[in-house]
Length: 297
Image (tube, rainbow, N blue to C red; front, side, top):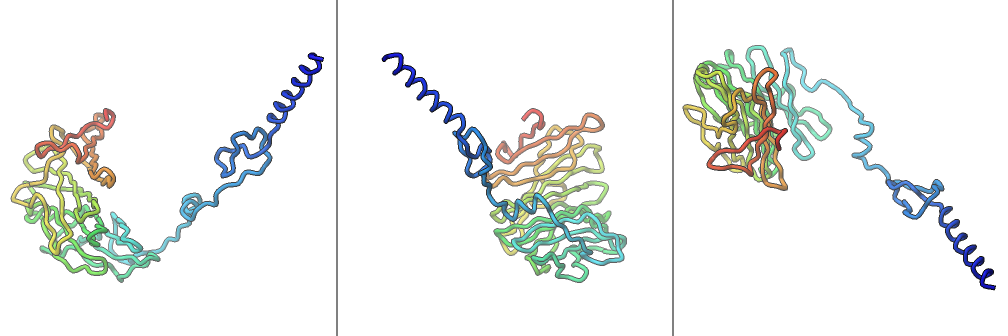
């Protein structure tokens, strides 16, 4: 009798194990209805419908057309989104060498026939406006351009702030003006921080030195007139980030909104000894920023 009960119990347990082993369902963990206890996939898996953004990334479709028709050479274009619209900045040459800006509609149609010149200061016929950069402050609803105005006796880093659809505004000095043989700021890069402040980094060199450094400034664009800090002077006044580094070049900057700090990267060294350095605004000490090699972060 006991043997019969034991046999019945074994058959019951075995049946349960066999049934569990054969349980069917969706076994794909990426599916919406994934069943953790399912052992055999029965083809019932369902998946989320891709969003419009996902579809655009998976199979992008581009339409190309000529933005601005010009007989001049157009180069170094940059585009910055401004809500539903955007702005484009570029350089045109030859003489006069100047920067042009045009706004784009939501359908990416230019709202100007040939673009508007950014900098009309100095003797335009002999001026060379180079190294353009463009940023947009959403909180102030303003664009800012930065560029090098490369006239021999009026060499400096200049900026202009204006609202979308209105190019009126005065060009102002970020660094300089200098004599070209004395001071040479180049390669500006900008980033807005969401509270009306645009940070700018640039490469700095002088005619008396073969080394170069990376400097930093801020521009408050929230008021009617932009405020540069530190203010421009007879020598370069930007805060030096690359203290102790020689041949520092090609900076770039980004804003971390969650941490409330900016990050800057730049290249140092020459030849096979080049490396990339990084510094952030959270490590400012005595008006200096601690920058470090990326491979030691």
